[in-house]
Image (cartoon, rainbow, N blue to C red; front, side, top):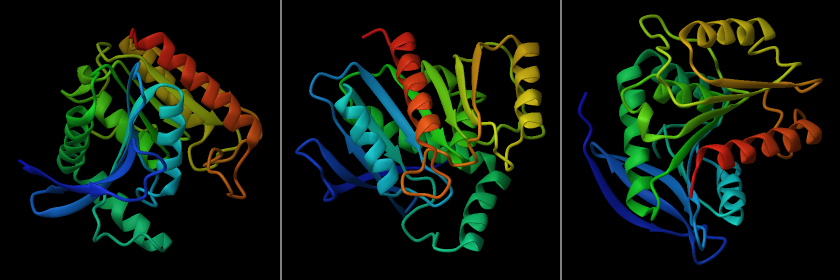
Length: 245
């Protein structure tokens, strides 16, 4: 599948002069991402959203990264016309991409292009939340892997689809997981660790006790402040270790 990109207007929802929504087009479909720029950027972070789409949550995380000195771009994997209001909508949106990995990778590539077009530094880390974590790992296994210096998942999907594997040449992988997650179990974590260990891929896994799935989502009944703070600290350390600027 070949997807062409056209950058369109960008603006609104800015928290400062260096933060704005970004509208872009992929093969005639409209998408909306979010760009937050640091004053003296040390690197670039690509953010992949949860199954509810690109929302104010990703904007807030991008702003937090800009405050730490990193440019950040939250890409859109669904498009403006994809409904995400209900559980059924979200299952349909994510399911369509899980079933079409070629399209998933093409949409990642479109987001990477948007981020790189705006960033003065190309040393990049990719992070994702829940569904977005699975997308980040998809990129890590792809021929785009070397575009990033590392990949991080927050309570993300860990299963490797049939026909794919890890070869040991991937950049480092960071997994931040809740011990009380019933969607992605500790057995799933163990299976994933075994895959990466066998392949020789560099990885780190942190597990936070009593933290359920989606433990980082502000305002949610699943939010766990201790696990959120610890995982954010682990991620910022990962940035420091893997971006040299």
